Image 1 (cartoon, rainbow, N blue to C red):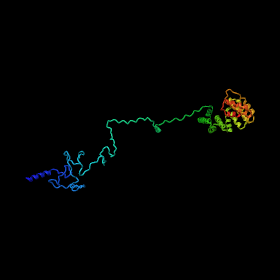
Image 2 (cartoon, one colour):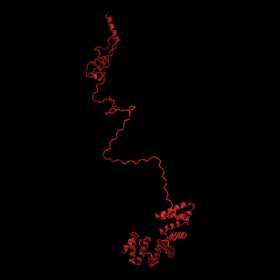
Image 3 (cartoon, rainbow, N blue to C red):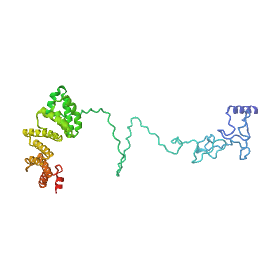
Image 4 (cartoon, rainbow, N blue to C red):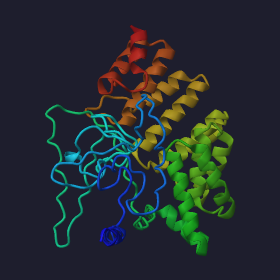
Length: 376
């Protein structure tokens, strides 16, 4: 009877799972038992025979764990943090100190383990309108000095080509008509060159004008306008023989006495007195205009004075040296030369009177103010 009861209990014990020897889920092992009841002997736990460093005898590393309240049969370190009761015992990590940084951060917001609190990324949901851009700050009341603006880049549009500058239309005169007839098919270029030379003379560039006129003179020697303009350029530069040649050709081609005063002055400069007398007679006989005759008269009086005939020169100018209510420029020229001749002849009161007459009509005429001041 006792043997059958003992066998039945051993069979029941053999069908149940064995409990851990120490530190298991079910709590602490029985004291003094090193093997399962009714089974083969269990090997001793790892480090069970070792004494603790503090000198406690008989205590293993995985000492007994206390049961928690409420009948929870889990181990001490498998319990939630709120249900841990008492200091840890046996193997496992000690309780983390408050405020102490560990090697692994439990804060999901700080993946870089820094102290910066990064905001969570916000994603726009489907159908949600886009957020409006942040408003610009209000304009400050104080004026700010702005940096110089960069020049705008030129637009890549194709710009229209500007039309070339239109040439000034050629004025039709007797000279251009004559040259056009002589030049034939090259008339346009010849007339254009003649106008260029005339513009250079008006600007005071006589040498440039001569460089343009010489080829024209060589191509069209019968062109009176070319010969006249070239002769005047020579005269302004003081080249009297060349000027007399060109202006003489002009007079022969046209039969005009328009340039006779200039021809007379060229002959006077070369001391060709007979030529001066003949030209003056031709001019006086033609009598083209008052101003032109006055110019010839002044040149003839000067030639007489150069020959030492001051009285004859003064007498020639006195015929047109009377007072005029509204004097023109040729009147002022006659008065001025007459005053100069009287000063050279020694008649200072007459010279002073004539210089004063010129000054009253035009104070800026030549050097009349200085000449009058010199006479006192």
